[in-house]
Image (cartoon, rainbow over all chains, first blue to last red; front, side, top):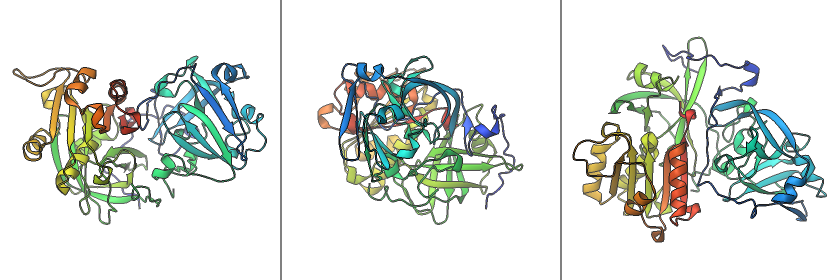
Length: 201
Length: 249
């Protein structure tokens, strides 16, 4: 049912191998900022990160304690639902697998919480097995506040709204609860390769 | 808000351009009719998909500039010189041409009367477009929610919707302030600088009125204005933001 727009043509080369750019996306060298409200300014001295398992039992870290854990450097492509993709972004963070060694049973689902009230939901399987990090470094520097610092979630295989900025906790359970954008018509899961932008895609 | 939260599938549908309105040398409105349009809330946007003869497709998001009105919706598009989609929409598309659209999208950066007020709108450049949908909705429904609108543009010729805003101001008591950041005509009596804390304190609702604030524009503008609002005492959870980046191409 697609119509042809006469005279419309591609203006730029993609500049990337097609197998790295999901459908409907274009590659940008910039790092656009998107958020629903003002940027929270969280000092390292007040920052805390808390995870709770499905029984509600938890573990909490100060910034110093968090940075004492082993971290990894990863180079990944990121894909925003607003259609930009950015390739080969370099992050440093603590693998969610490492965080999960501190709790017993995470259950099937995760609700991610952030300073400022933002939330997003993911299946536990999508943050385990080397697929997700709580990142504190970007491109060799501390993550700036507008990009989610002190720390943000990094789940590069899903649209980037799942990679919550200003993250301060994980609530695991056996129930899937919608997060912020998921409640406003964005897709529950958000696989860029299946172009799951909005509810029902 | 309940309506915006309804989960349903957004299918691509056909929109037909019925009219163009030139808003400034670089900005043009497209009035689109889309039979069966489900309606939208002021502040929501649509995705547009263009398809080339060789099958290449490009999608972009555009804010809707008008409140719900049957099958009609207007988008107001700024020309991005090296862009791929905006030059086509502004320079190549003709009345009667069809484009694919889907939406409405987004449910947080919206205003409807049940959300109350007072309302503070702050827009930079073409960031005034979704704010205009909110103000037009207020006027159309005869709402008495108090509105203030602070609009920032580079120069006088870049100011969008001037005549309409002037009409609204005299008729409905909405307070509109324009600031010009790069150049201004001789005798310009309004502010002539970027939006800063002093300007917000002079022209925006004071924090103790607890306005619901909507800030839209380029990233640097939104970042600066939202931070300033918080610093002069506005509650962060009463400030909603929408940013135009290169993703607006």
